[in-house]
Amino acid sequence: MENYTISQVYNSDVKNNKKIDELLTAEGIRRDLNLDYTCGVFDADFNLIATGSCFGNTLRCLAVSDEHQGEGLMNKVVSHLINVQYDKGNLHLFLYTKCKSAKFFNDLGFYKIAEIENQLVFMENRRTGFSDYLNKLLPFKKQYPKVAALVMNANPFSLGHLYLVEKAAAENDFLHLFIVSEDASLVPFKVRKNLVMEGTRHLNNICYHDTGPYIISNATFPSYFQKDSNSVVQGHALLDLTIFKDIAQTLGINRRYVGEEPNSQVTNTYNQIMKAKLPEFGIACIEVPRKMFNTTAISASNIRQAIKDGNFDVLKELVPQTTLDYFLSNEAISVIEKIRRAENIIHH
Image 1 (cartoon, one colour):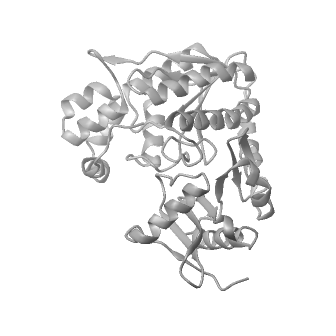
Image 2 (tube, rainbow, N blue to C red):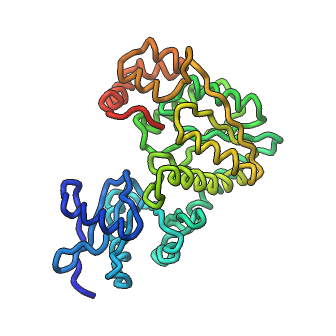
Image 3 (cartoon, helix red, strand yellow):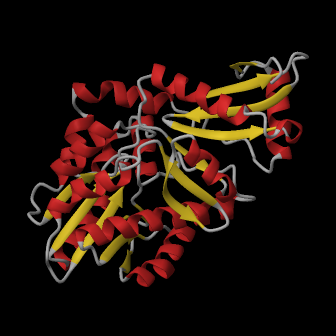
């Protein structure tokens, strides 16, 4: 094999980033919006011939030039990225790949979690990672006629979230409440989880679960395999539901509640896919109209805007007392400053 070098490509390196974009495009891949490390493999003449990136503990945007296929370069890129991740303390790693490449990554020590036919495969570097997660859920299985599930980010926990939880708890024998544990939100996971639990403490038929890495948020689902935004939403929903099916079977869940989304076409499309697909798995999908404040649907985005504006008169109308108490405390100062500094607070 020729003498190749591999090194990090920084965001400021306009020339090589352009080469990376060209290589990804040639391989039918778009640069993902969420990347925090990128590397390139260069030949003796400094031509870019392979690339790969990371976001959190996931490997992304992996590509090798057609002219250099079969030279072990992808192995070199993956090994480099694994070492980068290990140096950061990330030992449990994930990747998304095209279906035709899954066997190659399996040979490198990655194992299939879920597959969306003709789109992508979601993989991890632990043979029993997902099954271990399911086994940890098993003791919480309840044998009731109506067992429901809710998945929420709660960024932060609002009166809208509370309304949805109370409705699901009232209409079912038991409720499994999954809190998205990815720290991709302005309000940290530890805070979000505590606000959810404090705000629903009066309900006695709820079990709380961290989603771990297996329920993927909009923020970190890869977009680089799909040709347009609608395909991204469909791919995300199908992957979520493929994984959720196994979680539901483990816990005996037969109903999933979702909040209606009048303001976001993306979330509305996601909900429509859930309503179509979940019944195929024996799971009813119940879409609940959003709780309103005056004539506006209560949303986490509106709450973050009130926090950013320092408008606590509005905030107290949108959140439970437990959430309000947190944002009035000294503990919330750093989170409030983070929200005020953020350029974009109107999102999922």
